[in-house]
Length: 492
Image 1 (cartoon, rainbow, N blue to C red):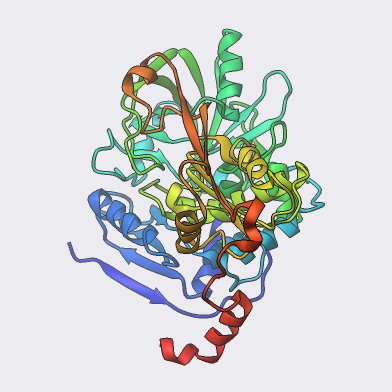
Image 2 (cartoon, helix red, strand yellow; image 1 turned 180 degrees about the vertical axis):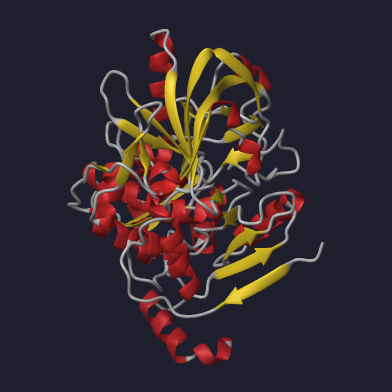
C-alpha cells in the first residue's frame, strides 16, 4: 500500500504551555516538526515508523490518519516528546536550549511552584461520544502491535491510569502498560512499588474492586507528569496545574467518580478485581528487552468509553534506549536528582545527567568540585539510592567538574583514566529493582526476588594527590567553546 506524507514547516509562535493535545500539535506543526502520514497499515507500519523516529535524536512527530481497516478519522500519533524543543514546549520553557541547560532551566522553574488543584467542570470535548454496556468496543481504535514479539496490541503506551487512594483520598496518575484483550477487557501491568499498584492493592486487601480511569490520548503535560517521580500523596493534576499556571479541568467520571481530563481524546472507566486475572505479556519494555514473560495480572472490565470526534491515540512504545521515553525523562529525572542532592546537603554539585542510553535509570553521572576527602564516595552512595535514581539502577559514576556529565564520551574517558578498578569501585547488593530487569535470573524472579546490585564508580582525580595528577592536554572548556563558535564554518 502506498503511503502519502505531508511535510509542514513554519516557526512556532511565542506561546505558553499548550492546553491539550490538539493545541500542542498545532504549535508543533508551526514549529515544522509534524509529519502527516495517510494510509499506513496498523501492523507493522505504525510500529516501524515509531521505532525509526524515536531512535533518531531530534526527529519529528508522526500523525497517522486513514489507517487501513479503521475509521479514516481515527488517528495515531507517535514520537511526541522525542525532541528537546518539544519537551521545552510542554514544560513552558525556552526553545533552543541544550539538554543539560534545559534540565537546569526546568529545575529553576519548579523551585517554589505551588500546586494548583484541578477544577471540576460538567462537560468537555471527551464527552462528544459516550458508549456504555454492550456497545463498548475498544477494537475500533487503531492499536498497533508495537514490537515483533509482543503478545498482542497494547493500547496503553502513551497513556496514564487515574486511581484514588482509598485510605487517604489523593489522586494518582501513573503510566503503566495496557494490553487490549477484546471489546471490553484490558490488562495492565504495574511494577512493585509504584503508586498505582499501591492503590490497587489497598482495594484488593479490603476485598473490593479497584476503580480505574484510563486516558489513552491526553495532554502531553499530563502524560509527562504521570511517567516521572511525583512525591507520594501529590496528585499529578496539581503538579500539571502548577507547571501551566492554571488548574486542569476535569469531569467527575459517571461510573467511578474519578476525575478525568475534560479535553482528553480517549478515556475509559471500569473496575479491576483480584478475582478476575488473565495472562499478560510479554511486552517489549524500556530496558530494550522482554524483561519478563507472561504472568497473570488483573484486568479492567470497561464499563464506559468516552472519546472525542476524530480521536487521537497516543503511542509511546518503549524501545531499546536511547528512545523517546529516555530523551524527555533524562531532562526531568536529572533535575530531580540534582534537587535531591541539594536537599541532602551535598556541596558543589556541578552537574547531573541520567543517561538516555540507560533508559535514564541504569547509568547516572554526577560531576562535582571536590571539597574534602570522601566527597566523591558520599555523592556516589546518596545518588545511587535517591528516589529518582534507585529504581532499576545499575551504574552510578562521579566525575570532576571539568567533565560534562551528559557527554558520554567525556564520562567514559574519565572512567578510563581517573579510576582504578581495584580501588575506585564500590558494590551495593540487594538494591531496588523490578521484574522487568533483564539481568535478574528467572529462578530469583520466580520467588519474588526483584533486587540487583549497583556499581558505584569514582572517576574523580584521587583526592590525596589530585594536585599532582597529570594535566589534560586540551584547552579549558570555555576556550574550546569559543573556538568552536569562531571556526564553526569548518564543520559545515
